[in-house]
Length: 153
Image (tube, rainbow, N blue to C red; front, side, top):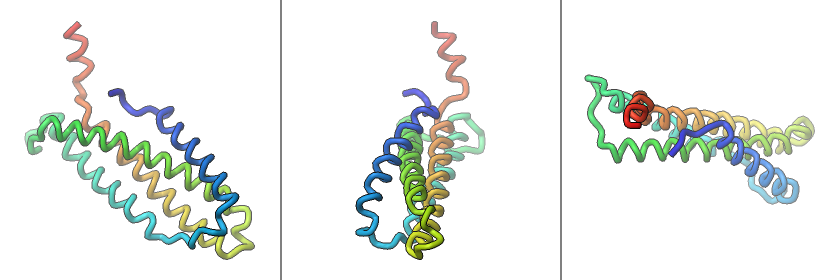
């Protein structure tokens, strides 16, 4: 599995953003008001992943103060980090689409202004999730991996 790159994050951002924008144009009036609590699970997952990244990094780098971790747990953390960064990128795309739809009328329509503020909160939470996912993924990669592969050839 290769490391997540900017292009990998761009695809869900663009695809989800376009789909959400098109759906909002036809269905926004049927949606319930957005709530700030929407951002809480994203922030919670990001915090857990940042804590896990620190622990995984210590185990992978054989820090004497770190508790050892099974290789399968480290591999699962790597997969979780990759998945979280991709999902977070999609949520960022959805939030950008939401804001693009709402902001032109946010000053005139109370619901648009309120939902735009929630959209910004979710956008920040999703960006935090992308960063945390990338940090967890990078923490699970052995820094000496390239040296080991070069010696094997």
